[in-house]
Image (tube, rainbow, N blue to C red):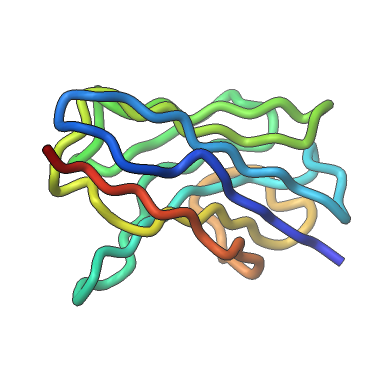
Length: 123
């Protein structure tokens, strides 16, 4: 059973940084592309970033390009989202997600979701 657990959220001032982590279990992470999403109150869920199974390809939403970096460690079954130069509009619940086994590239159909971690950017 695939499980994804996010951590690392919190309250940070504008211009600050946070590193989100996603711990995966019940799968061989090397067989899965992975993504990060976010959802702010009253807004639709937004795809933030995606990384291919072998880390060879990444993509980002325009709203975070140049500020966020996605990475992964397949041996540790971990996916990360480094968020720098945070803005109040980055405030949201952040989710990691993945899709079918063997789907190595982005984009992908997302079947599995974590419970989310809250990020609040405020002074």
